[in-house]
Image 1 (tube, helix red, strand yellow):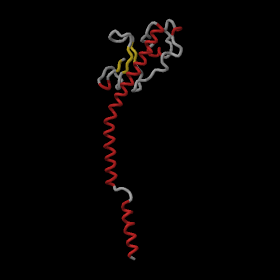
Image 2 (cartoon, rainbow, N blue to C red):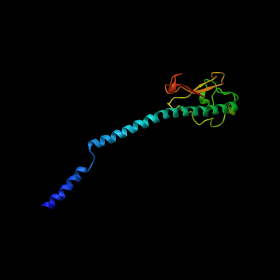
Image 3 (cartoon, rainbow, N blue to C red):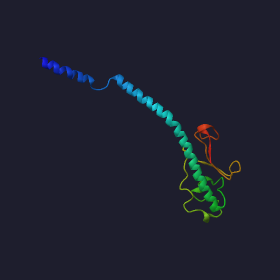
Image 4 (cartoon, rainbow, N blue to C red):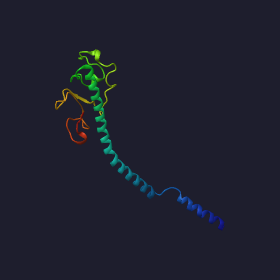
Length: 151
């Protein structure tokens, strides 16, 4: 009989050690939540910066296409023709034979917030044109993430 009690006592201890206690699980979940918070605090501002950089890059690409349009057609698109003139020849174009086959860009990108880029001709401060995004809020003006991004 002593052999049976000796073999069952270690088996009982092994059964108690299998799995995790509630306290251990809570500690692990707390550590994971703490790490997720630290990562979110450090990553979210980077996302906002990346969206601004993407908008600036898109605007620079369209501005370059606008310059190629002007070289071929001797003028910038009118306000009414807008950015669509970079994708397909506008009806108001006086010499459509100079328009590049396939357009100047394949398609008009949306700004990082999912809205269309804006075009103004003539632009402010003596510029012949301006391409801009209204920022995160979609309203003219603003500060920080809501500020307009102008090329």
